[in-house]
Image (cartoon, rainbow, N blue to C red; front, side):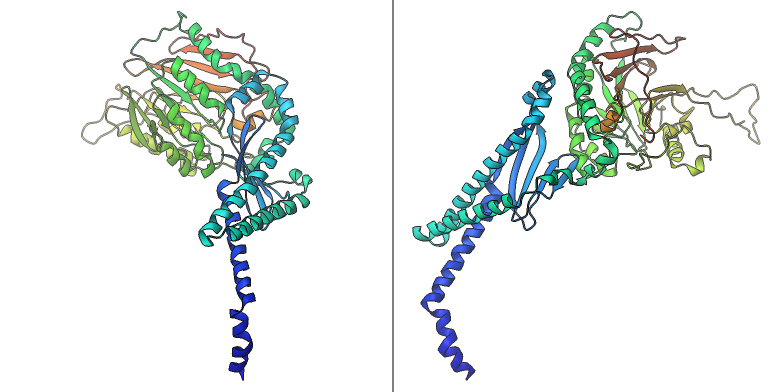
Length: 530
């Protein structure tokens, strides 16, 4: 009975004319959907200028809808802007150089750009919608031509693709939620943005004032170099080795242009970076360090407490970079040793400012233990070491007496001091005691803590006066001894000048040369937990 039922009713239904039409219709629908998806993914892209950004927009099929705004290397924010089946993605990864320069040059351009941003985005979305419609139809037609080889069926596929795309866009427009922009969901480094940056309007205002001065900083570096080169206080010899000390860039993109200018103008032999090149140590920040390859000089780096092993690896991949981690390198005959910060604490923004040394003893501090490890490496180095690099100055005390100069950062404030000499232990032997009249001579060790070459990153703009950008040029003679150094400071709210202090080793007091500006620069207050 079952067999007769299948033979009489089911088989004809599956093989009849209407069954064939249903299969054909399903095939056309499948081809149309596939063409819509493929065309949208491959061709539904559009570029639009939004303020200084060259924004890349794209759409993709989605069940949940929404909008994603990518801001590399900081991360992304997600808006529940509409329901599916279309997801909008906006990438703000590139700055338009001409538009950025125009914004900096014209004081009214920033506010005008903000007012026109909505119109720019609207035009970009309309352009993207038209491109998506065209892409889905064309791709569906091409796919139908390969499958059916029939103009009629191709027309049906194109029409259905147009209906699917237009219907999806209509659904997205009908469910649009403009208020969603006030409740974004953050991912990547932007998760920390509300807590780190503070009041967004104040930061924007501060950055607007700061941007006005940044446009003049690079040219002022060249001007100050021309002035300093004619000063009689100290004239570096032709065979001097010139080292540029930078530290704590904290993802500030403005730092690279200034570093490149100083390298060129001051004829720098190598750049040494004492860490915290990024903020959170995430993989999205790795693109920031690619600028190292454009510096034009060897780049010697030690890891900071904000730098992960992945960031260290990204630095190591740069063609001119040398990463030190309890190792040494040589530049122009100058032997440099360094070790990375043993602690990875990018979230310690609320911890108190670290101190040099450790009251609880070396055994309880990984920083001091790292310093002791580097001291052992230096003592085993044939011919000695001329310069040691650490990130946190708390790592420096064990290096006293092993190396003449230690460079560090971390505090976002310049400090220069002589490390206390270690106690002299009497050398005794059962067969040949050392006379008391022949004390062991201990090397004097100078510790130079650099300020933040990145102006502490975004967090440096939290206060009314942004943290200045700081770096130092060190001059070594042919005996590899430090003879002088130039402390360079750029910026400060309302100032576009460059301040330089030249200090000559061995002169008391060390003279200060400030050819660019008067001496009214506001002192820097270090941030707790750099």
